[in-house]
Length: 245
Image 1 (cartoon, helix red, strand yellow):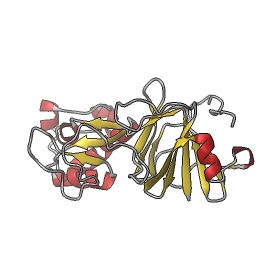
Image 2 (image 1 turned 90 degrees about the vertical axis):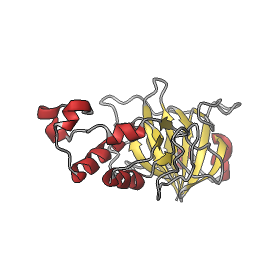
Image 3 (image 1 turned 60 degrees about the vertical axis):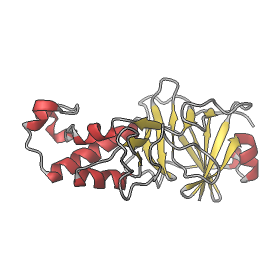
C-alpha cells in the first residue's frame, strides 16, 4: 500500500530551506522508498486520492509500539493518507550517539522508584554492575528516546555487542565520527560513512524522515517507510489539519 504523508511543509535537506510555492506539501512512500515529493494537490490527483471520499480508520498497522496516533489517517483503495500538522524533514542527527548508548544507563520504568527516569552516568553507572544483557535493554530504551525526538541518524561506532545489535535492529542510520577515521558499524542500515547529518530526501531514496511541530516536538518518525514513532494523541485533541483542494 502506498502512503501519502500530508504536511505543512517539506525540508528535503537537513537544516535546508522549505520547498517553496505551496501551503500543503506531501511525500509519497512506496514500501521502503520515496515515490514522490511535491504539492499535495498534484500528488493526490496523481495517485487517485480524494479526502472527501476516503474512509476514516483508526490507528496504523505499521506503527509497532508507537501508541495512539497523533495524526488523522484515512484510506482509499491502495493509498493511505496520513495528515501531520508539521514540517517533514530528514530528521535529527545525534552526534553523541555512542556516549548516549554506551556511557549511560537508561532505567527500566519498573526501576523508576530506585533509579529515577533519567539516564545514569559516571560513578552512579559504575556502581550498577552492568551486564551485557542489561546494556542491550538499556540501549533499546535509549533508542526509543531518540526515535521519540525525531532522530533518524546517530554517530558511532558502537563497541558493546549488545548495544551494536540494538542499533542495527532499530533501523537508524549510523554515521562514523569524522574525527575518528572509523567506518560505519558492519550491518548498519546506512553505509553513509562520515557526514553532517541525515540523508537528503529525494524520489527513489530511502523513506527515512521525521515530522516536527512548530515547538520542535517530533510528531512522527519514519525509518525505511516504517512508522516507528507517533506522538501520543492529546487528551483534548485539536481539530485535524485541513486544507481545501
